[in-house]
Amino acid sequence: MKCGYISIVGRPNVGKSTLLNKIVNMDISIVSDVFGTTLNSIKGIYTDLDSQLIFIDTPGVSKAMNKLGKKTNSFVYDSLDICDVILFLVDSSVYFGKTDKFILNKIKQENKPCFLILTKIDKIKDKSLLFKKIDELKKEYEFNEIIPISSINNSNIDDLIKTIKKYLPQRDKIYEEDDITDISMRFIASEIVRLSVLENTYDELPHHVMCKTIYYKESDNKLNISVDIIVDRDNLKALVIGKSGSNIKKIGIDSRERLEKFLNKHVNLETHVRCQKNWQNNEMFLREEFDNEN
Ligand SMILES: Nc1nc2c(ncn2[C@@H]2O[C@H](COP(=O)(O)OP(=O)(O)OP(=O)(O)O)[C@@H](O)[C@H]2O)c(=O)[nH]1
Ligand SMILES: [Mg+2]
Image (cartoon, rainbow, N blue to C red; front, top):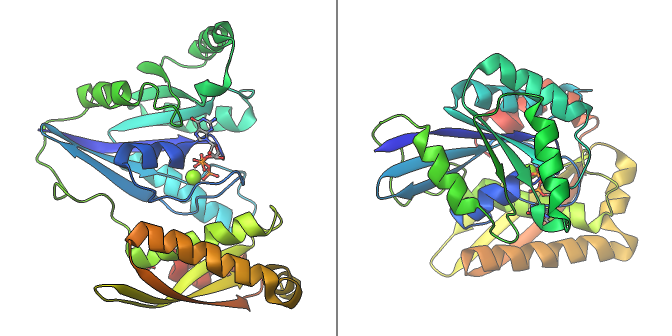
C-alpha cells in the first residue's frame, strides 16, 4: 500500500489545523482566529483500502523571539525532515508576505515534493484573482502541484488526498486502521481548555497561556478531570478569572460542554489558574510540557 508522512506547514492562521481536522473528520487540533493557536506537532492519520496518509499539523512559523518560539519552530523543521510530502499552505485571501517567503526558503532546502495549497478560496468571490495569485506564486518555486482548497466548503479535499497518494512510497501501514491520531485524550482535553481560554480572553493572551491536565480518570459514563491554566504573569490571573470569577466560570462551562460533545459522556471538570513566571523562556517547563506526553 501507499504510506507516508505529509507535513502541513505555513504561517499562523492560514488554516493548517482546520485542514487536518477536515481530513480525519474529527476536531483533534484546536482552531481559532488567534494567530499562533497550535503549539505542538499533531499527527492525524487517514487510512483507506490502499493507503495510509499520516498528516503532521505544525505550529505557524514565527520569528522566534523566545524559547517557546524556537521550540514551536523546531516542530516545523523536524516535520519537514521526516516527511515524504510537504503541503505549503498559503492563505489565498491575504498578501503573500515575508513569513511565507521565509518558510518557502526552508522548504527549498529540503528538496522534497512540495504542493502549494491555497487555502480559504471560499473567501475569494472573483476567481480571476485566484488565477492571478497562482501565476504570481508559480514564479516563487517549481511546486509539484498547486491545489486551491476550502476546508470550510470541502472544496478539493478529496482531490488533494488522491494527488498526495501519487507521491508516497509503497510501504506497509505504520498505524492501525482505526487510529486517528497519536496524541492522548489528556492532551486533547488540555487543548480544549486552552481554546476556551483563548476565546474568552479577547486575544489578550495567546502566547501567555498554557494548559496542563493534572488529573484524568475516565470510566464508562463519566470523566473526572482537572486542568491547570498557567499564565506567565500575576496580573493575567485576574484577567482569566474575571470579575467575581465570571470569566473562569464561563471557561469552565465552555470547556466542559466541548469535552462532553467530544467524548459523548458526562464530564466533571475542575480548573485552577496559576502563574509560572515567564514560562516561555523556562527550559525545564518547556521540556516537561512538550517532550513528555501531556
Ligand atoms: N473562510 C474560511 N476560513 C477558514 C478556512 N480554513 C480555516 N479557516 C479559519 O481560519 C482561522 C485559522 O484557522 P486554523 O486552522 O486555526 O489556522 P492555523 O494555520 O492552524 O493557525 P495556527 O495554529 O495559529 O498556525 C480560523 O478562524 C478558521 O475557522 C477556510 O477554508 N475558509
Ligand atoms: Mg493550527
